[in-house]
Image 1 (cartoon, helix red, strand yellow):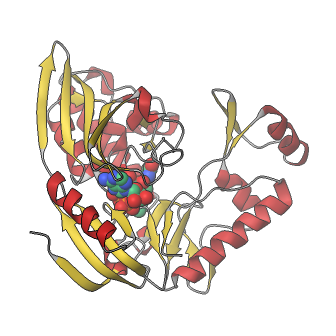
Image 2: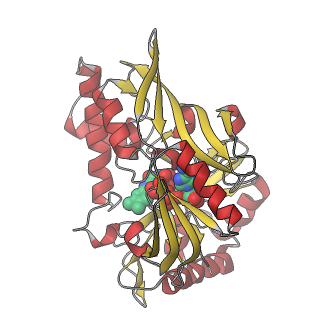
Length: 351
Ligand SMILES: Cc1cc2nc3c(=O)[nH]c(=O)nc-3n(C[C@H](O)[C@H](O)[C@H](O)COP(=O)(O)OP(=O)(O)OC[C@H]3O[C@@H](n4cnc5c(N)ncnc54)[C@H](O)[C@@H]3O)c2cc1C
């Protein structure tokens, strides 16, 4: 039986704590309830928004004039252990960091650098969540979805998902078409953690010699703890006591430039650090923002830049309108100075 709540306060459902009210709200903990809920919305011609943990969503001050469907499909099952691999199935509503912790404690290698990221397991394929040298695309085997038009389950293999830096088919060509119900990961049992990110590697070296630890679990726990400590120092772990964590994490993705675009940028900003990324060149959005005059701690109308992380915009007592106005002001300045368009990472709903 579906249970609808009317006029729910959306600010309480997101990490940034913004937004008005939703006309209707329903939590779905099974695939069947999800299908029933969408059917209800379709039959009654009500627009709906799929919500996971709300850590990458900004709702408008006017709220959402429709149905917010919170995915609460739970469960973690070990499908198969084969040689040194494990296939793990997670319900889309599983808390992401709890899943990472479970893997670390089970000596399953592959997610440890993604510790401390808020949100749900089902949202991770949407923008190919990544941090500290790992991305979920490296370990996702299948994504099980519900096709919102046919109401039939559809499985996507890793290749089918068209993963790339902070994106996938679910954010691009098939935006809004599929709802993730389960994610299947292939992880290494007792695998060596692969530390690709220099800052993390340096930090771990100040604490311990990772490679002298014998147990995989100890190694993974060391990496997880280091990632969480670094993240905390940047307010990138949700903490009600840390006002700078009232955010969506990074508000802008790092731009990927083509060769000719990079050369244009270099003509005005020669020292910009460049990270080759396949056929593109990734550049630091934070550097562009700071060089455009927006420093950590900058605040306008209660919307601000985190005092510890230039990419995180923080609700310091603002409205959603103020927050987007600040984001747009930053983007406009960066574009004016460097000709580079900044892309917002969070999803804006009800605007
Ligand atoms: C402090 C902080 C730190 C962060 N650090 C990182 C980081 O290091 N790396 C990173 O990549 N991100 C980071 N984020 C962003 C965010 O945590 C991730 O994008 C996360 O995966 C969002 O999950 P969610 O369940 O909260 O998504 P939501 O905000 O609920 O939803 C985000 C989008 O996904 C869609 N969606 C959610 N669930 C489903 C589903 N089951 N099926 C289909 N669509 C769905 C929504 O409709 C929406 O479009 C951070 C956020 C915060 C607040």
